[in-house]
Length: 360
Image 1 (tube, helix red, strand yellow):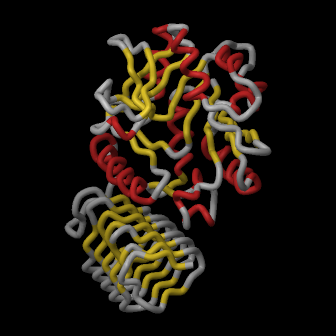
Image 2: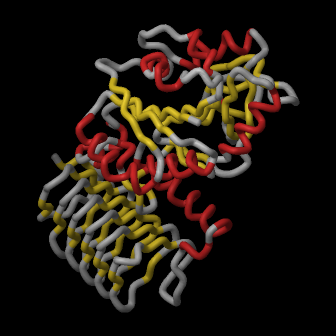
Image 3: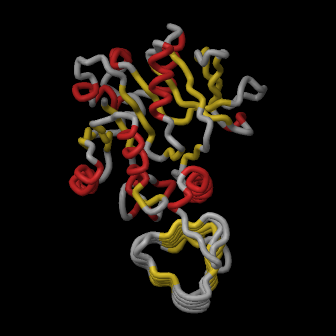
């Protein structure tokens, strides 16, 4: 079985992290975002994954060379010369996706994180004899989104963009199961699958929705990335509690790579992930924070609601809060206060940032 992941473009919403690597390769809970998806696809029976890319192809090829054997899944690239939307890449990769077997295939947006009930979704798709199935998730305020209107059997009737009156509370979660015949509906040009393909399948009564029961988040920007961290760690606590760290210095859900070093008298949590090779000094307090691979945080520093990029160094007695995002290899000197600072890679910060600012 096959799958296509829409890797997308420049990842501008997740800068400065995406200045160092494409968005799908940004770490999320100690492994690249896209690895969470490929592992879930493998569990659902997928043996070949197509990455639809148009940005930094050489970096993606290096990723394939590193991870293909580790994951036990064939990974190939389909490169766009210019942006093709959310349906055009399927037409471009048609020769791979439509191998004559008539087997359905998965399509995923690369910045979606959830519990990935892909096997159950595939079973639902086959039982309904659908042409296409859309994963949908319930939201509290549907007026911000495009709402999927469906009947009690999951058959999609229509889509309503940012409704002013209540028509439903389910939205497109960015994961699909498609039959190869859907490719006949897509021309090789920039095309939106949501606006230009799905409405026609719905008109033929062949489009269905499978409702996600667990968490869901588009982690394509820093605030949502941190919300996704909390939701993912909550899910690990319920389903894979042994992966989380426990101890007298831990509050709530904390994920620590085995190679990280934690000093004495630290207070960690809630909702913290600490990556490979990190060194956390004595008396450090971390909460609602991602610490990526190779970071060093010196003694008695406090970090809350922040993302610390790879190989960065934060001096002692410093304080970072309010959605700070540090790019790769940033150095923060001792005894500084950073409030909502967004800092580009390879910068050295010698003065406090008392109000939110972008440091170029």
